[in-house]
Length: 267
Length: 287
Image 1 (cartoon, rainbow over the protein chains, first blue to last red):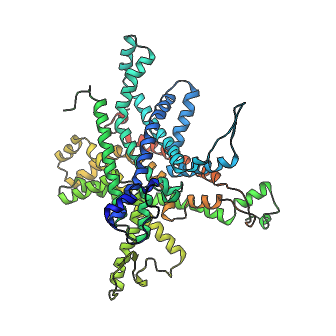
Image 2: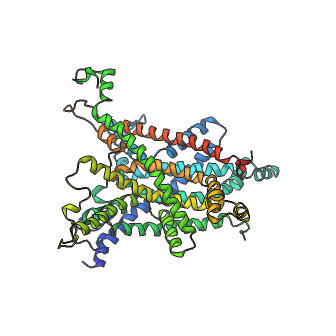
Image 3: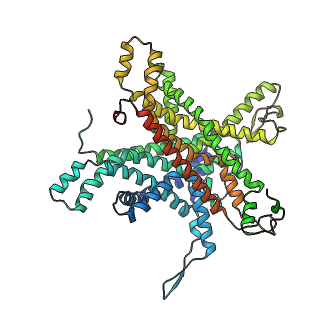
């Protein structure tokens, strides 16, 4: 099989398109590069969705944590403490077990005129269950970063806004929020990289890979197990991760530049 | 453990629980907490050693050392730690076996890599297949410790490198003005003042290390995650203590354990930071 054939049959293998059987013998370098690359689709999927959704939740959590109302402050604080104080690995297991138990309990929602049985099976599937875990995890860490940034907003800026008669809402959208993002951005970049790296744990820890549709690490360890040679698949996956990490740094760097565009550059 | 535990089917309530929670497997479960804590304690000196080596290599005036230090410290930024944890133990294991093979069976005719197989002579196996179970377990644990030390050593090297650079230049110049040798300046001024800058990063690293410790499970060590899955899985009536799927409960317990550990560490580092800041040339040291 030529490398082109391998590419057409395995490039989308991780999402179930193409050849069903994985190569069993005579693993070529091409096989490994294509399949591990195919698995990266999952890593990117998890990272992009978890970061995007997590961002909004994190902003609300950070606002909740800095709120004066204990109804918002205490739950936000507890959530951040639990997420930041426990290993992601344990969170994966815990959420997986919880989702496995939910369908067994049965779940009927009575809307009065109609009764719906909520289908909870897909919660135990990685595409949703693991996404929820990663989303909650990144939201917790990001919220802490944003909370720290909110507290470091210069008081004078807010006072100046009040002095010219801005409303609370205006102050938030025009002063607090942009400043918070600007201050938090370098740490947020780090968090994005960590989350991207954490996506490697999904299929490897708790959520089973269904029909051998797994992420890049799933395939890399498949090859390492079959060939007894860790020196090929792991460097390949490492290179993939390095490339994507550089991509994250570049993209976040652009945003950082835009956020800081009104600030005189350090000379 | 207790006398009334001889037939667990007959007892219930408090007695059942006391027997259940003190049976042999639970004792192994409690022991595995010590395994995790000892991994944490054992890796720390190695992490600091690797960290200092990496940081000093990066500051070295000799270019190849500097390149090595830079590559070592930046690799953890680009590659997930889990990949190192999977790669390092196998790679080290195979490396050791190849060396032993070369020494002990130099007359072996066939190559070591035959297609998809990795074949070394029986005498070169590490540990020997005849060794006791605990030798295998200790060897696996050792490889895991080294993998942890390499990865977190690189993180520590980053922090220490930054901290060494953060010590005010004037402090070092004063030392030079007093006629101290470079070694004396490093030992008496640079190193003691570095800690206060390194500590926030190192305490953060310790938190990450704690939170990475359940990955031991993936390396085949019988750690707390292994036992939580083992004990929590549903047990049919064939077992002495039948119960349903309790894994959720066991994992909740692990969660609480980790929360407690990180909370305790945070308190501890706050105190140290307070102590170290005394008399230092930083905002916290002024008060």
